[in-house]
Image (cartoon, rainbow, N blue to C red; front, side, top):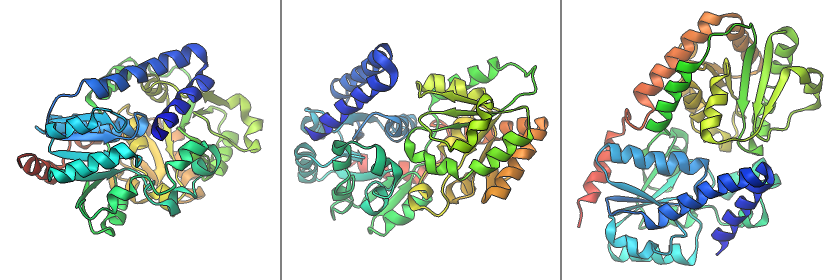
Length: 397
């Protein structure tokens, strides 16, 4: 019941943010998806049981399922609220629990999976399973409702991670993998990837992108939640310096981002965009000349984040300047397919290089796209040990 109330609260927030007609459209999409994830599930090898259907689920449930299906592992996605969940246990061999809330139903499902001696895999793309991390985030302290906070009061999914029956985990970054290994689990890293539908969309957007007739340079930062406010603060001073120095630079900010009063003097050079559908988001991002991916370096919750901002911009040939943390350092070759910055001085210097050199922007954008198509799409992925593990388990009867 608690998880249902949380989702109803999110639907209410959607109407509040997007108005009646926007709320009806978006909520209608979610309701259809909710219906499909309960009633349109065919038997297979792997069932991903998801605690939600938002942006995290897009990458860690739906895109992961698409990837596994591409590699011969029949995978379906459902929601933890599915009243048919117990009946589905007979139809699958492996059950991946993704951000699930502990409920009476999930407890029954886990017990039945154990009774049938089938496999449970814990999945995470964040540190939300450990309260000492999640309770320090701005998202938790400021913007969560009481119901939403309750889902984290024991650590989201911690009961599954701590269960001795559960031997295996899958996660999105090597940083998270190292933390999960402390729980004495075998950990597989399955990085986030772009779906084939979004690859096709990106190709169309890039093909339609007109050559610039104006010297305007659009530097963009897209925020999904208020937890990104602190990330943006890390580059506020370099951006203020750039807005002052370059008359042709425009700062494009997407989502519910709060910025300091220091930016008010440049209000004519700042464009604010609302949260939009993924299709519209890609169109907005495609119009950027430079993409920003700042994080609070050294903060565990931020360090655990994946390379999504690099992937989404790169597939559109938009060059990224990113925080020089472990994850971005593993996927970006500095100065080749993106830029890495460790402090304000580096942020400003590398942004200035991209602003002043059109050919460099185009070259790095193309290199980023080449890397993502080669290594970060659901079709061209390289998780052979993970696929072998799942295929071996799926043959157990």
